[in-house]
Image (cartoon, rainbow, N blue to C red; front, side, top):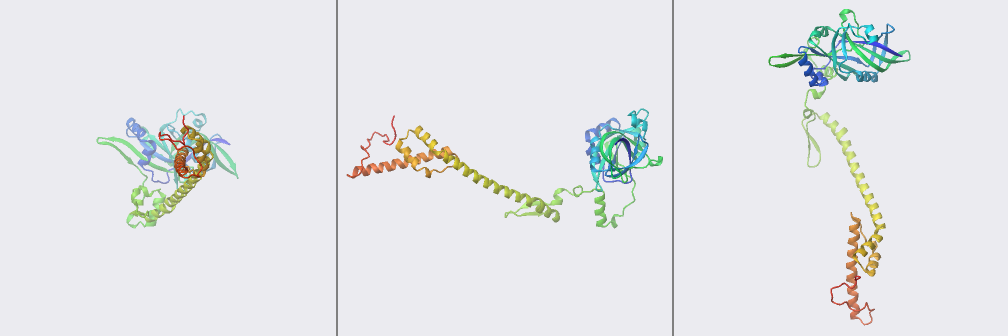
Length: 391
């Protein structure tokens, strides 16, 4: 089922969404642009929708129904919110159905958006800018209402928000005029005014009035509960180094901390650092094993290619057939290093040296022993190696 609906939210509470949050979400450039164009305007942040149940008006059917909103629906609405979307004073059903907003009082426009988890619920925050002429009405308005086209599914007798086609505009109103909120617990988060003074630009946040808190009587559980309620994180109170401390590695490789919170340090070491180091150690072991396997594979390949390559090198060096045969007979002594070809050449050189030394010894023995087999005429002293093939 598709329907054009209105969803109303109120300002029943105030959370920690301050002027910095607004500036960070809309960007300084846009903020400064709006401020310079219309000094005195205001920025307001609202929870426009959140997970849970809301009462909505089906505009065409003039019927109010309850809708279940899941996280996916809130994310879908967030993706549809665009800067420039207009705020209008009160609803106008004819305008909603015809997209004709002529005659409606325009109050402001969307300039930013955000998503927050508030009290465990995915929440869509819309940030609007209202020029000076709309400031008073926008300030007094405590109701905002999304006018949108949604697709719903009926499951177990309930309507479930599934997908959104379009967010048309946002209406604003007041409970004083009889309007009622559709979302329980939805609220205005912050209001920031932008105006110029003689000594520069000032921003002030106007928060809803609250009862005074006696901080002297505030217990730690109360403080903890307030921090959780208003989503105050430790890093908003302390610098990261104050929280964690300074991590120092001793000569023995042990990590110690100077200052900081011991529980947080234990979490970092046990849940983050230790698993990382274990994975790193395993990776190093795997790399060593892989390197050993590759070396073995390269050794096998190099040995298989040894004889053909050694014969090529022997031809390039013009070695005698006797020298080549001697080298091939000792192929089991070949050791392959990082560079196979260099290993082949080194092996050839070693074999040539060994062959020459043995040949010289054999010649000397043959010349001095009558019955020794003759190796031929003694080499002449012409400087040429008799065991090398000559041109």
